[in-house]
Image 1 (cartoon, rainbow, N blue to C red):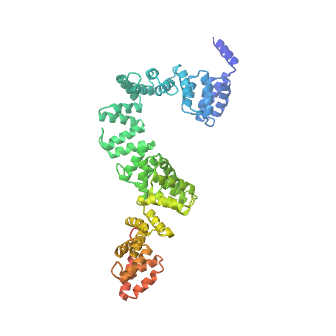
Image 2: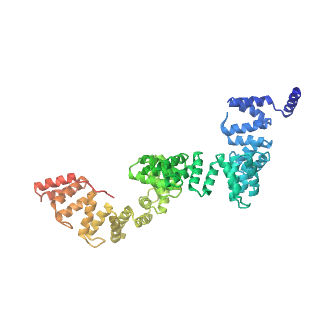
Image 3: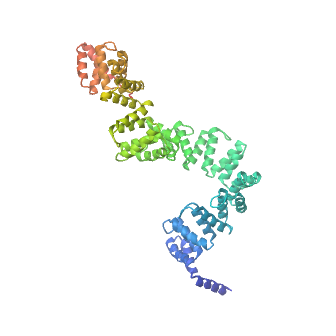
Length: 545
């Protein structure tokens, strides 16, 4: 009998041209980790038509065993084995085509291959084909056929099929719903550790404590969604005792799985010291991770932290990566920050084209700082043809939103525009900027009030604004205020104050300040001069804008 079987095998091999010894050698080499020998022997076998060798080669190319990963080669070998009726290969080729691996996605061909494998009772193929019927992908939507296939696979204890069948019976639209049976299959899947089944059961539970326990089980199985839900439950005390530390524990687990909302929550917890020790550097780290995934709130909080100066800003390359994500989502501040990086060349040489692109995008969304800077680019012809009209247009948009720099730039245009100069318009914009504390505007509008140019003369108000600008260390304003003190215009005449402010203006490089200081000194006693010098030494500037 044994000799007869050997003769039969030998006869089949001889007819097909396949050497059983070569296949065995290849598989033995594969099992021993000698993938180079395995791929050589199995290629010979595969080319000769051995479908098991073909399937194994597909697996090796898909996983880079003995060769570089090649999805196209993997699909080629899987399809060769599939044509010979190899169920695993039919399923593998279908999976690759469904997901566009190795070739363009082809849902119809994937469904056909799944059907071939499903007819051979291939459980994963039955499950995958059923999902296509549920969604109407590659086949006409057919919930009845989906339920039939899922029932076959579920009865063979496939947990994914049990979950999918339970969900279908609860949510069906073209076949009768069956809540009792659906719940039963969900419970079977849950008992086999399917997190989605636990979550679906939790969502249908009317008992907060029961729902929490179901989500906790899913969280412990590694579901990021369940870990998030568990964290929220602990944070809010719903279904479990409130605990910031437990909330932080589960947020962290979800965050480590790249859940953007969990990363944002970790940033918030570290920023506020809830459930963890307060650590703004750690907060920034988590905000950056969430922002890289496009979380708008994380980007906003990260910008606030970095602007405060309390955390180290991201290095320029990381910043570009983060800002591009947010900028691509239409975040105007991200677009503006990206423009500044390119304009200043923080990642290398300045890139005026890149700066202009993002500055314009931010400006067109109404970002006032971007509008001002875009106006300045047009005014100076940086990266764009020089255009005063364009510059004024963008300055006005920013100025109308309260941007002090744009208001001051507009005023300068109206003052220095030759025959088209408009002092009243200049005074209007300087007044608005001065109200916001812009020291250049305080100085400029103060001069106009002192001179009655473009506005009714008001010496006292002009002096008040000049003092505000002088207090910030603005040299021109300090010189002008020194003159006012010396002459007693708008303020009581005070030679000591005149000396102090002239001295300060001189240190800011105002050449005429020396003459004012000396004139004041000639009207003072030695004691007053010493007092003024001491006051100047101990003077400290106020915050400037």
